[in-house]
Amino acid sequence: MSLRLAARQPLAFLALTLALALAVSCGGKRPPALATAQPGEGGSGTSADSRSRAHAQPVEEGPDVRAVEGERASGSDIAGGALSGEGGPLADIHFELDSAALSDEARTTLEKHAAWLQSQRGVHVTIEGHCDERGTVEYNLALGEQRARATRDYLVSLGVAQDRLRIVSYGKERPLATGNDEAAWAQNRRAHFVVK
Image (cartoon, rainbow, N blue to C red):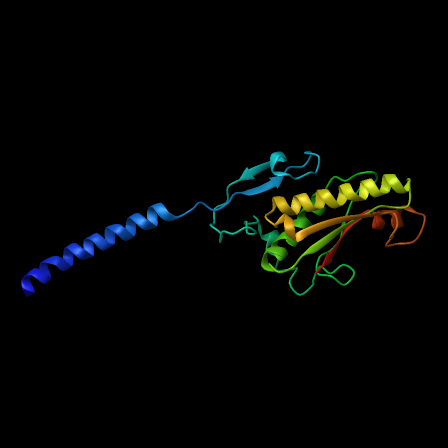
């Protein structure tokens, strides 16, 4: 009887090893690809306007996790509020006159914001679109909405769940800087982040 048991153990071990190898090789999913909007695509950042790039390191899968490439997007300089803008952990981004297009500087800042938001899963953000004082109320409300939407869409393309991001436009109604010169106007053309 002990000979039979000894003869069965190697076969059982081999069968278990094969089953485990098969499960490991067939059961894994590919990590999601990082989708980013390219400059000159109108700043919408939606998946139809985005190009996908494969990344080298697998990430934990989930509805709100995608790798952000590059050291600049590690989020280490955001932790603890290092990018604070008006008391919050996320710095404002700024826009050119009559534009909702994201600059390279704004994209870099948003990549850092996305890394921080992915590490803070319980956080929701309201993105406020703001304009300078020039133009009509209606025009600035529409432009502020376009700025907030472009900002939200880019964060979504970086892997932040859209249901965590709300947009609102204040147009020219809530200026950050007072004054009637380019320096004040440039500060007021922004997307501001309210973290909840």
